[in-house]
Amino acid sequence: MTADRVWRTRCVVLGEGIAPKYVGGLTRGRTGLVVDKTLAGQRDALLAGDLSGAPTLELNAAPVTVETLRHVGRFIRQHRIQTVVGLGGGSVMDAVKLAALFTADPSLTIFVERHAKRSGLIVLPPVSYPNERPRTVLMPSTVGTGAEVSAVACLDTSVGRRLIASRHLSGDVAVLDAGNLATLPTHLLFEGLLEAFLRVAGTLIGSSSSIFDDDGYSLLVRIVRLGNRLMREDVPELRLIAAHLSMETHTGWALVGRDPYGAKHWYVANELAHVTGVRKMTATASVIGPIWAEVANGSAAWGDGGRLLKLWSVVVEADPSLDPNPAKGISELMRRWGIAGMDIISQEALVKTTDAALRNWGGGLPMLRGLDAMQVQHVLFEASLDQQELARPSGRATSGKGKGVST
Image (cartoon, rainbow, N blue to C red; front, side, top):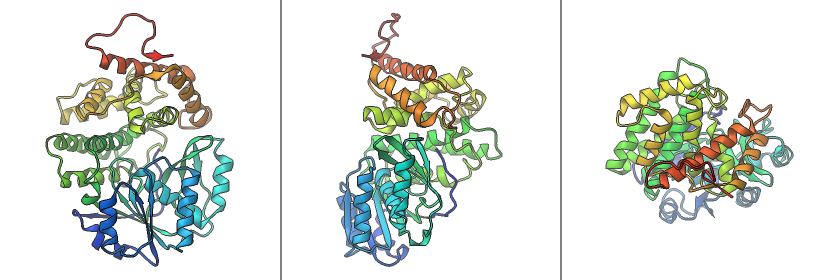
């Protein structure tokens, strides 16, 4: 999902290692640092620079839960923090964003608990005293989510993973420093590029034509070209560009005026990841090819086939080595970038994912409106078939028994 931003995030792009001597000018009042505990080098650099003496809270890079928010909220209240600097991936930044907002308005916790059973999306009501929310300075160590500028955050609840939306969730300042991206494993860098690519592509496919279509196509081409460059040379400057492109999927013109629920693949992949425990992009890599095949075959509930063919033709024009068939081409791009889907999707996971996807995002809700259980199960079934086909030396089995779905 994409969300319109009412608060404007100030975006700062810095050279490698500059942030520790720059971040102090972006804070106000008492400042605390919330950081992914694996980023010891980046943490120490900040504490040796402008954040010297700042109270620090280390978090695991794990899905954000209500308990996570209580933990971060206690840290904010205990130290009377007026600015929270968050350094890490999407989960750490989501934790900072949500905890800062919930600390300013504790009634939001009750609101989320009451509404979590109704839908996968929870739109928060207006905050009574938004100025009491601690200032947030968000410093990503990963690429793809754009959490530092987006107006949404993910929260794992007792009834499933929920997408929380509020105009107050955008970071006040987003800081990109190439040094913070240095420890990101290469395979996660490419997963992040794919996530940014599909955020734009999925929304274009699920929306009507716009005067900003060319902006979307241009952004897709830039992401693919950058990915191809990174395969040849993985250097700090290119990682910084990757992070900036990820941010641009939220802040640029490409998605202005689009259907915020246009990227249908996200909702199925989100539930598949939650049910199976795999990473979100592993689940996404499993379902995107089958979903695009359905779109190309005229299944309008998944998206517009004509718009899919148009955007993919623009990508292929920029990179003629890709298959002109969108479903085959995106699978080829993922293989080139070293991104693999799930080895197998069990029958139990298929049923649970279908049920959760339609319960949380389907029916009368706009996200998966028009899709039924058979259509979602077909995509998951084909996803498992595709993974078995990749693992097979050659050819697809002709038997109809046990086609890739484990029991």
